[in-house]
Image (cartoon, rainbow, N blue to C red; front, side, top):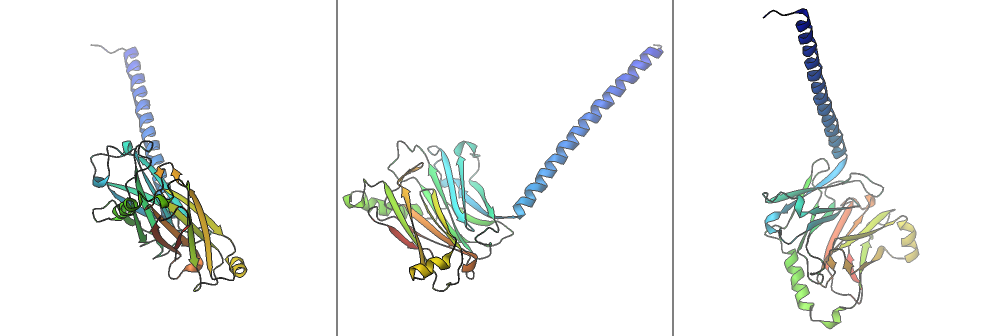
Length: 289
């Protein structure tokens, strides 16, 4: 076969088109790779500036069939953190779910350090409408910040946890008690922050959590409040609606409280405590440090 000049020219042009197409594809792949790398570097940089608590949830003790989502909530370094994780988004072949809870290492209240305290709770939320007055299965854990540069692990729904069991016991003992305030639609939680050993505290935050809900308040001028009350204790009462988006608060439900301030360190910039609800007709009190 004899190649004409026209055939050679067509072949040359075709080669050029192929080369252009390959070059374009390579440039797209390179740009995509560079973009992913840039995002990865950005995320890595952001994570270095964050304090991370890694919640390790044991899925073997989660009712994957009847649970619609898992609410993970905590108070870490003076900040609230909350995630609702749909069951549909969880890999059913895994036995464990890791949830990174990220907060600022430093804020207007406190700078993170070891061994500051924190708490994290997880609630298995199912058919809230039909199970409104029952106790949704949950677990809570308190811990100390182990590192400000690496994630601090906290385990939930482990075999050795008795948090839910204790709540069930209190709930069961009071379920027929008409004096428990079954018709009362509010629950009050009074948090006490004794400061006899930290009388020079200037600013702090007090927070309370129950049934996956957190309320908090910043006391901007602690000294002025202490002078006014002639006391060495700051206190706040938080009023929660018993009807929540994950069920009704019951006698026996566990609640947590934290107080955070740079002026509380040492020993800890944030201190936390917990108890269970015993009253609806009066405040449930808890010293948080």
